[in-house]
Length: 342
Image (cartoon, rainbow, N blue to C red; front, side, top):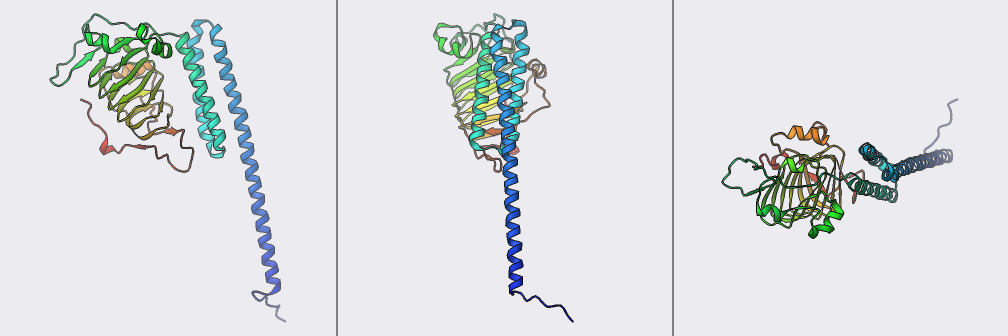
């Protein structure tokens, strides 16, 4: 005798169908609970590890004031490496962290960076900046009017300022007495040479439609309120901090870049960590391609590896989605990149 045929829509079939659906729902909920548990466990582990490491960095910074001055360079080097490691750890963990947790972690990193830079500037002052009497021989050019650091020239004393001057106390207290400063220039072509720049901090502030060439290996570069400027810089041993810049073109090599409140800028970049932007729009990046004589020796002096360049790795603090790219920055198309800087 043939077995009974189950007719679609019959009572047994509907019961079996509901039972399968019920089991599928139970299984789906179980998987969701497991996923939530995993994410919660990952988040808890991240917080414990991240903030524990932050505390260790703070402890190192708290001890530097009493440490022998001979040990300070190695301590600050270790601090900077720990901060960079924390940045990478945060970036890799964003996929399972809440937006609030990401923001709090970023704020902690910003405070650590600021404290470390302030202490390093205070406890390891650079050599005093001064003008040299020797004349720098430059190739003649019919269409340039460079003001070259190193020459006895009235324009130098007006535009390039030692941070210890009385009229610049506010700036020197913020950027250090040794900072070399170019301030308040309009429609000028300015050059700083390696002898005065190497291992010194450089500040460019309130420049409009200026072209600045900086040869050598500065310690840090600060740029504030630049408009329609072209800034070309050799390898920088630590960081570039830029605020309130618009319609500018930059070319520099550095360990890290922090760009704030800026718009419509093109950056030809060599960076060994990851660039960070915040409150920025219309930022374009391309590989660093400015070159000059002795540049390789300046890379060595700055401690930068010419072969390690993360120019297209940009973290936007205003764009926390890991699924879509930030609309605030883009890669400059090769056909649009400058080929010559002359």
